[in-house]
Length: 292
Image 1 (cartoon, rainbow, N blue to C red):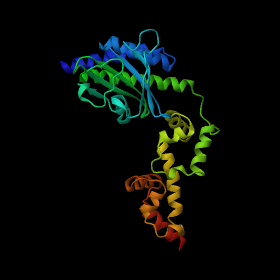
Image 2 (spheres, one colour):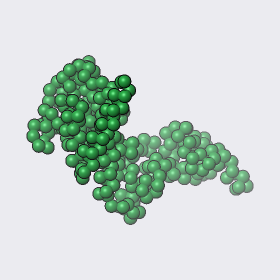
Image 3 (cartoon, rainbow, N blue to C red):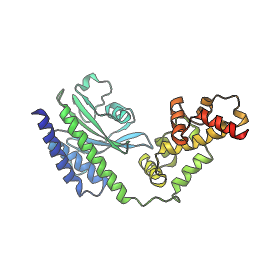
Image 4 (tube, rainbow, N blue to C red):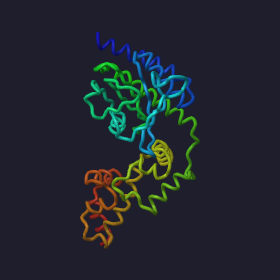
């Protein structure tokens, strides 16, 4: 019976939120609609959506319903959190939803408008990139259940899908004349940023002054590959050159890979085999045979 109840609630949530979001034409409308309807449909007393700014590495309260929303689309004393700060900031880092049954025993808890004793945080993820966090607090300890978590996860997924659709409709088709794409290639070819083992989608996007979502879509649309595959192509080209360069004669094969920007043996060998079909050692041996 409990399984049937979960299924019915899931069907109702999908149906209701899909219908509610269908005609929304802006991200702003989506966020405010979700916060309002989460409260009414799930019987909560508070709901806030934080959006993530990957350039500043911070989360900002963007939409709310409850005490935080005294009128219209206004938020009472909106707060900002650094990535990793508070329960919301921690969920933003892990991208994994959390239920806190007793906030008084959680050192991460940050008081917003008033102290509440339980909290639930669910990330909104678009193409594996953090967009924001749905956060709700309740004055009662242990208020949130796995059912709340399940339904809010559905809401977050529907929200992400709708936001992605809005982005796609408003975005002009990418071309290789795109200024950010040209800058990206320059950073790779001339600045050789791929040699940084800590290089990430977010850090590169910040360097370009665009969002991680935009950069991911840019690379995927123009090159039909992921950002990491794009970066690894430059690293592997470096490895191929350096395996036979006199300056690298005293290097091990792994050291050549690490110099090119790979941060581990497994990442290096996996990427090399994926692109070339052979191992770095086989590549080096084959090229030695050909040169003799």
